[in-house]
Image (tube, rainbow, N blue to C red):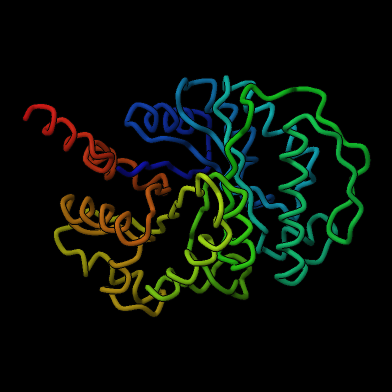
Length: 315
């Protein structure tokens, strides 16, 4: 029983609000907005607009860049979104990989370990602020003095946390603390600062999931696993549909089709692949781009297992 959400960016008011209505009506779980200052719209402004035209759709940044966001400002954005949406906000965070975003706020991007430490510090601070606590932090990664989120107070007692990462240390931390671990299977950032190598082979996915499991050891309820799907294609020729992504990533079409980060093939093949990813990896949530909405919307009842439940009930 898989859950699907959509990540998108607004380009104008009419198409954005129409997308929000469409995504909700189709049965998607949430609408997410990317957070790349200078390269896309402000996620929380966009999501507030989406909140105004929906009533059940989850809403969140996917994911906020902890490297350039300060905890009190991020907490205020998340809490405000929760208020204006009537308790539908999600808190998504990541370590930030784009050097230009750091330089734009007067910082140089730290090494990987430094970015991970900053992400953990910011995430812990935001969660404390959302809980109503006062925070004081003074470390190499974060400085904040007597910060408290007096208003607005969020509607939800605890806003769900998604940590998006492929880093082993952060995966372990997310396994221990997050509600959802967002897997993209991305590796080293390429020189353009935006694109990545991928870690999509089976052994690489297993290594990432082992980090999550290690962090989650001892938890009563482990985090939900979610995959960010980079390509969706409904096609009678799955291998041909995967060929472009295979060429870009250096994988074979068969390897691409075996990952949870690409869904390609006939409707039956896509439904089977999603079920297979749950059995093999334990991944039950998927985030797709806006361009996949029309193709996947008719499949959502099958992907959620509702048709199977209906048949079971009739018998």
